[in-house]
Amino acid sequence: MEFSVKSGSPEKQRSACIVVGVFEPRRLSGTAEQLDEISEGYISNLLRKGDLEGKSGQMLLLHHVPNILSERVLLVGCGKERELDERQYRQIITKTINTLNETGSMEAVCFLSELHVKGRDIYWKVRQAVEAAQDGLYSFDSLKTRKAEARRPLRKIIFNVPTRRELPIGERAVAHALAISEGITTCKNVANMPPNICNPAYLAEQAKILENDYDNVTTTIVGEKEMEELGMGSYLAVGRGSVNESLMSIIKYDGAADDSKPLVLVGKGLTFDSGGISLKPGLGMDEMKYDMGGAAGVLGAMHALAELQLPINVIGVLAGCENMPSSNAYRPGDILTTMSGQTVEVLNTDAEGRLVLCDALTYVERFNPDAVIDVATLTGACVVALGAHATGLLSSHNPLAHELLNASEQSGDRAWRLPLWDDYQDQLDSPFADFTNLGGKEAGTITAACFLSKFTKKYNWAHLDIAGTAWRGGKNKGSTGRPVSMLTQFLLNRAGQEQGE
Image (cartoon, rainbow, N blue to C red):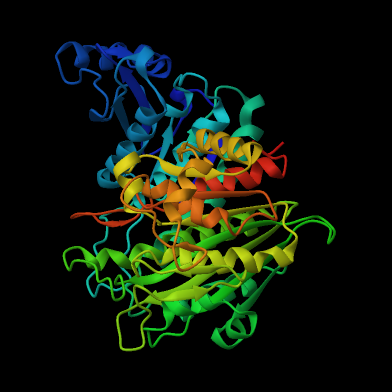
């Protein structure tokens, strides 16, 4: 799909389709009014007859509108003008793109980017429109023998900006959105792969692809032999029951001077989580291939970063592992020695993500990081607390937490901060080891982060629990590509390029 921006009057557009908005009750947007005047009331006459009310998501495709150069005009219901918010805007764009894709229009000029969304500028509206369009057109069919193809798919869409002065802003928005969308697609493609293909070695291969594609990206793979030498007993224990070797992929992006401290992103990469000896129920276990959503998100963010070529140093860590039951698997009751030297009593082998992450978080100390953010589908408790709408955010460093919350609001990839008080640490007490890997039924998301916090004392750290946001279940199950957009926005902000200034 090709995206661009332009500034022009609707009556001068010679295109397969012009897209304009209509508000409730049958009230034309400014651009639609212009078309109505040129067509001598053709559009308003149709609305008076009841063809379109203007409710959000309603669509009416018109052919051969009098005095209009374009072949078609698509009227899009936008709801009540004063109530148009960010969520509704994205929904309208998504439905518009899907409708255009079914009309046979191979290109379109879209004036919806001129709609007023409270508190949002043209950069945000164009970027969100491109991201929503790419998201709506995504499909994972690489393993299907029969692929559905659109009759005449939409190939080009042009978003109109009000004045020529805003063209550079719109162009930056398109460039940012395309880079982020590439990262989201990478995240989705890897996460949607079945576990018989996507194992820790596959994650390492994807990391190597980034190294091959970008000159300032280098990748190092840490295998089990080196993990043993480093004393990563916790990480190794989790993968012991699998025939697939645990592999930690280190992706280094150099965009700034060597003495500039790097930001580090650590992604949980459980390519399949059976629960181990504490076996999960069979129903829905197929979705445990998404337990590497954190690693997929970090890989996607690193891809977007490399596309944007931001002037910062970033290191992405994909903590690849597989949690399986076998005669060699680790057990409830085992006591593990982590890379940090701290010991952990295993109460449940299905609380394995934190056991992999804790050693990865100790490993990254060697990079003298400016900040570390780990990303993980860590707890079902986060799904209970926040559902599928918000990522759980916990941090020991207030400024870093505020940066991430700000990035989540800017990107529309929302997060919500939960407390990380010392009061919760007692739930991890163990009579036999330094602490346990499970804090009980209460506040499960918080106690999981409390566990991780024990390994992050030497740097500024934040934890993103994406258990509810990384994928959607049910009939239309699949990766959502989150939190690539939030992470990339965070990196844009750190690079001083919030809007490409």
